[in-house]
Image (cartoon, rainbow, N blue to C red; front, top):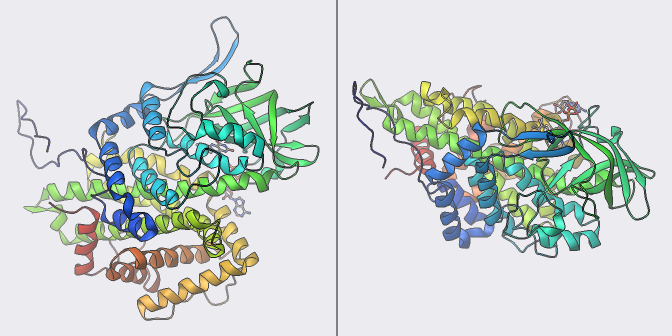
Amino acid sequence: MTTIPRFDTNEVFNQSPPYENIDLFSSDLPLVEAVKANGAGDAAATLSAFGRQWGAAEMFSLARRANENPPKLHTFDPKGFRRDVVEFYPAYHDLMRVSVAGGLHASTWTSTGQRAAPPAEVVRSARYYMTAQIESGHLCPITMTRAALAALAAAPALLAQVAPKVVTTSYDGTFKPWWEKPGITLGMGMTEKQGGTDVRANSTTATPMLDSYSITGHKWFLSAPMCDAFLVLAQAPGGLTCFFVPRFRPDGAVNALRLQRLKDKLGNRSNASSEVEFAGAYALRVGDEGAGVRTIIQMVQLTRLDCALASAGFMRMALAQAVHHCRYRSVFQKHLYDQPMMRAVLADLALEVEGAVALVMRLSRAFDRTATEPREAAYARLVTPAAKYWICKTAPGFIYEAMECLGGNGYVEESVLPRLYREAPVNAIWEGSGNVMCLDVLRALKRDREAADLFDDMAREAAAITGEKVQLLEAGNEFESEAAARITVGRLAILASAAALQASAPAAVAEAFLRTRLSNPHGALYGASDIGAKTANLVLQRALPQE
Ligand SMILES: Cc1cc2nc3c(=O)[nH]c(=O)nc-3n(C[C@H](O)[C@H](O)[C@H](O)COP(=O)(O)OP(=O)(O)OC[C@H]3O[C@@H](n4cnc5c(N)ncnc54)[C@H](O)[C@@H]3O)c2cc1C
């Protein structure tokens, strides 16, 4: 434990030591148990090594430095020639190197671009959840790279060339053609000025050439623009189509991606998000003309899982910081941790994270099995948008409450909380914003009998937990009602979390979660739920075991 230094004028006491040099895996019992319940218990030792690596003080320092020194766009060189490159601070590259070495960008794929055997998804999700606790900006290209192969499956010949370059553990941040690099990263461009949700309104055009297409138009958000290639939507003669747009043309010349400027963002500051114009850019088609949305949605389904994972990770880190601090900080001769009201707040926060981590790991298991088990595929279709909606929208308010547990220290930049707080909203906005996720759930419930049955099954399981009948919908509301969609999807997320908890956590945790989140109205703010002293002790001890 770090010793607290003596000052010339005062002795520093009653402060918590830094929360670093920890094992992010073994110190997190809900995670350990969720990993085990979802088929990856054998990976515990390697996950623990990963947890120690990312929980080291040096990783916290890299994260801070990468965010204090945001990337810079160099549009031109000193002589006026276009450069269109973004320069990242070295700490960003260091984070990328460690994440790529850990397989976060590719470990769910084989080198031929096929899905890796279970429990590859659960293991990667556990790693991703831990990494997001430390630094999330660099995870944007990591997420897009791992997800892109799902869309590239629509272009098997291209996939065969690209997959071996993705499925490596070598990160190469230099600006050169993708085929000359040992390892590459991939991004995506869908959103245009006139619409991000409604991508069918894309105005960017794709003109067929001899053996490629020429892309002309723009994207209003193109994150991680130093990726080696992007999956981009554009209007081809046959309709909206997905394209592979590399940073370099096959002859080695820089492709015509003109980076206009970088967004000045609320958070996510280590990552660059650009506005780009395509001035006749070289592109290869991925999938049929007109099948753009169907093709890229394969990728988006995976990025949505990562949004939920990352937001659950943010909540976990905020909770751990709060519990850790309150165990050391005394107010009125008593540790904050033992003050009844603070305990109620911390236990409520811990219960929220219990539900979130159980849900994302259960969902990851569904991704592991979609290819072989239709019911798991239905689960992934239904629960992915629900989990993204619920967890990503819960995170900002959650982090704010955790921040307050640290008092003034929590509001100060050097504590991790302000960065987590600024980072959190973006996960709800990108990859399909909140309402759009709810519409997605409604669509799945309406079109997919298996998904609707799953909803009913979860309600039955929940009834078994509480001993009461669980009402799925308010009287008078139908699944189809868009106006009531947030109520339906919120319930689905709670039911799915409780069902997941039942499989991975002590029964009392699942019961308290369901009782305080569904059966009895949960207070508008954390700490206003009647969890009960025994369960409160249990979840707090599970959140951060006391030595
Ligand atoms: C930091 C950052 C980085 C990004 N990086 C990328 C990137 O790399 N590539 C990329 O393609 N995009 C990227 N985006 C864009 C992002 O995906 C879009 O902003 C998002 O999809 C929403 O689209 P929009 O901004 O056009 O909002 P709109 O589509 O205008 O939506 C605005 C609001 O309306 C709601 N809404 C939409 N339809 C309905 C409806 N029918 N009923 C009720 N409510 C509705 C939405 O939920 C949303 O809250 C990025 C965004 C951010 C903030």
